[in-house]
Length: 333
Ligand code: AMP
Ligand code: MG
Image 1 (cartoon, rainbow, N blue to C red):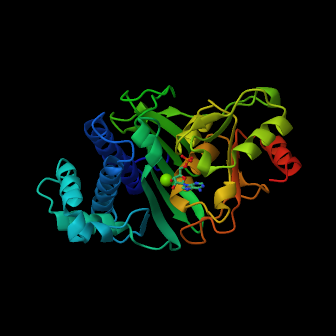
Image 2 (cartoon, rainbow, N blue to C red):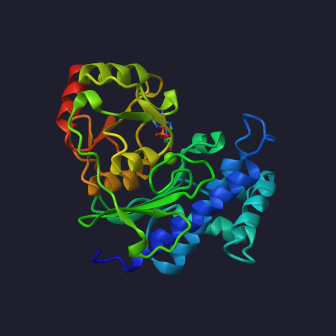
């Protein structure tokens, strides 16, 4: 790859690797039988710790760069959250020895920027519900220029480099650079190019064999419309339900053909956040796939923290994209 050693690529890979490995340790140490079903504290701790690590690393690698992160530290600064902040700080100390709780808040708030002409966007833990279930989640970091994603990295602790789902397995890290391709390697390995394998989408153009993916959480999509889509397309298999941008990773690696995001009927006002789609979408595009809205238009990351006009996303291996858009029109999605 032409720019492999370029500072942005090195920063993004190392930051995601460190942040998501720490999150994975937090998952192992905090998500146990001892917590109640509604206790979200492990993911809260992991989310803030991961954003602090990326904020710290960006500050060192690219001091003036904008970072639009999902989290903000204001709640952590309140006395009521002191214990949570102490927990977060103790985990962050594993990577930044001696760091104070106040500095941890500052590193988290490195991500309070608004999107500009050029910016980074971070979802420290995408798929928080998957994280708590011991299922799929990812750390997602992307770099955007003029509304177009130029670089994306996904750290996925619970899929192997050959895309098998394995909790507490080897894990994988994926990167895409605009015009240069998408790659995958083992999460905890050496981050040099010769350790990465090129990703390519599925070459299947048979609608009847299309493997469709959707959110695990029914509340994040329109399940009856997904089923109607499957019938309109003529596919046979039930949609694969999975959390987080790991769905984009599977599509990029040829382990699925179509991924749909449709607005939940209960949340028609929901708008996709930029950090939930940026890294995953470039990884699919650079692996040869296509990612658009429901009308076939490319996603526009120049409108602030959300994809403002967007009402849904259709990602595919490219070969089935027109059929997918036609099926969407047929069901009036
Ligand atoms: P997924 O795991 O693919 O369902 O996507 C997870 C992301 O969806 C998380 O980052 C959530 O912030 C986001 N999300 C939250 N509420 C909704 C919603 N009503 N519709 C779609 N996505 C949502
Ligand atoms: Mg997310």
